[in-house]
Amino acid sequence: MEAKKLNLTLNIWRQKNNKSVGSFAAYKVQVSPDASFLEMLDELNNTLELKGEEAIHFESDCREGICGTCGLVINGHAHGPLPKIATCQLHMRNFKDGETIWVEPFRAKAFPVIKDLMVDRSGFDEILQAGGYVSINTGGVPDGNAIPIQKEVSSLAMDAAACIGCGACVASCKNASAMLFVSAKVSQYALLPQGQPERYMRVEKMVKVMDDLGFGSCTNTYACEAECPKGISVTNIARMNRDFMIAKVKSKEVEA
Ligand code: SF4
Image (cartoon, rainbow, N blue to C red; front, side, top):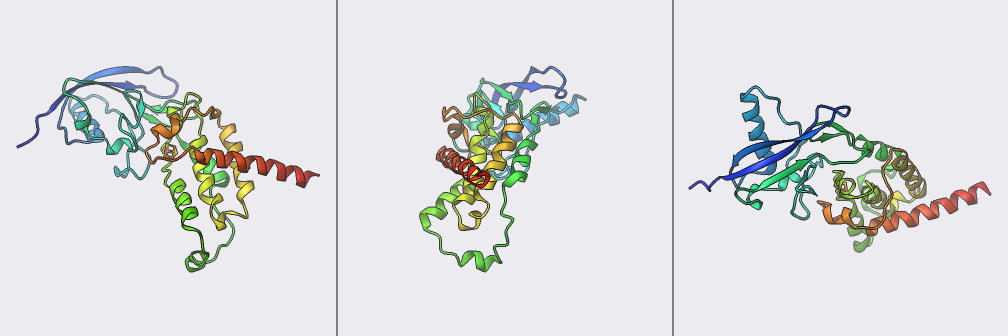
């Protein structure tokens, strides 16, 4: 037997583009508790299009919590009320019949709204282009795997590499800081032998681009860690800060 549908009111942010003023629009929906949050938006869009109205723009791709594109602020929480999941993994059974749900885009100066719930997160790409790679020749796959790495160290690097670049850390930070994202990307290389030759150049370049793009500073509220769908730890920020300080000292040594 099909589960009883939930009657919900969705207050969804509608905004034509970055120049226009946005506002909330209310929609009444009936949805299966087994539907995902994005499937509910798909159903709503089908209804709107049948009525000749413009669909609500939002981002999604893999719908498996991997790609990092589907970020929404739901009832004030980036990716919704549950810990350690992306918006695409949130199911409607986590809401109550008759509930009103507020749906907004990620809000940050460095993430300008494109339309409705879509924001431009290409700033993250620019930060990665500045240093989020290993450009030295580390040999083929067998060569890389032949370097012994302690289990605890490789686990820390893998934990940092779990960042999916969704931007929830920025959206949940009162300063719109990108420190959790950048520190995860810095750490995944800083912990491994292959990342050592460019370690200090990398952190300086990535932090510079982050600052130039207008992301805010970290003031240690840990909101980023609380809302991160992949449980990225703020200890990565401490590691990045240490590397940044060492990079500055090394630069001075070169100048002297
Ligand atoms: S650190 Fe977490 S919240 Fe920030 S971009 Fe990576 S996965 Fe998303």
